[in-house]
Length: 357
Ligand SMILES: [Zn+2]
Ligand SMILES: [Zn+2]
Image (cartoon, rainbow, N blue to C red; front, side):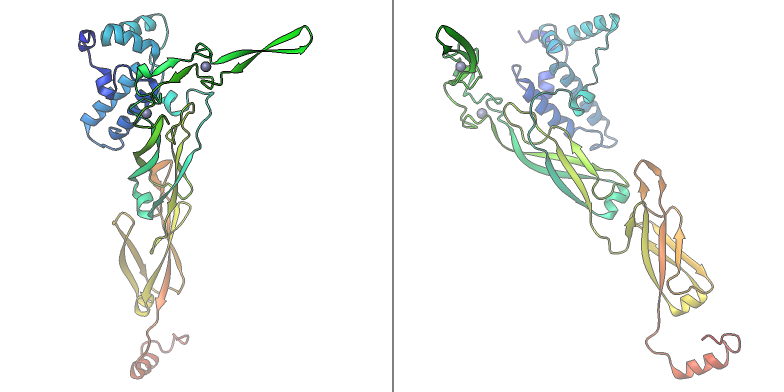
């Protein structure tokens, strides 16, 4: 009976789910695997990106009732044929799976609250971009009962009170001879139409359990404090609800050298009195460890601000462009100056034109 699927790839194997897996589990495994093999997380690794495509393809088929049906009966070839036919009929068989997925394709069910997580990053992180692994503890659908709450499929029975309807009819006589029927939710099964004889031992019938999920948060170059990175529908799972979003919120920590103002950076740089008088060429380390040259000739006044074009932060929407770096020069005066030296200074070098000294 498994012979059919062997003709092509086994999409159930690819997503590591049993053949009778409910949609929620398929979706859960797809999300988990696609995070592991996401190209952002495996730069330059073509085997990972092949795997990623394979996972996406498997999910595209198994998440679509129609395609999954065809696949179960006729295998990969059957799905291809079906798509061909639809294409010939002018339909687009490749519904944008990621679009559906990440833009909240289905509506209606209430959502569990969003989880907001502060993400502390350094200025170096947002200068160069970084991937950060974050473990998030949350409620996930029980993988033993697939969220049914039942020990096994035999433990789920049709509710005998409502015969599986989920509701019962109540007759109310509101005046002699006037009887009206009201439909009300079945109290035995709480409207589910099914009752559970033996509850799942893994989740004690709660349908969800505590879990842990790892996320790779891609912090893009130029991101700033309060910007958010959203993982849609990744918050707590709950029966009869869609998960809300996990929202990572960037918080950039203070840097000892640079202060950020929008796309620009500001820093103070202290020079000696001699350097202030004669000029200098100095190097400091930028946020990516490259060298920045601070260079002036002649006299530098205390507090002078120089602008170094393009040495600021990368611009979020255009990584080829950068803000500017403003450097403010501070002069460290000597604690003591030898009196003989001062006399010489006054009498020789600076006289008579440098009265200001
Ligand atoms: Zn369970
Ligand atoms: Zn019932």
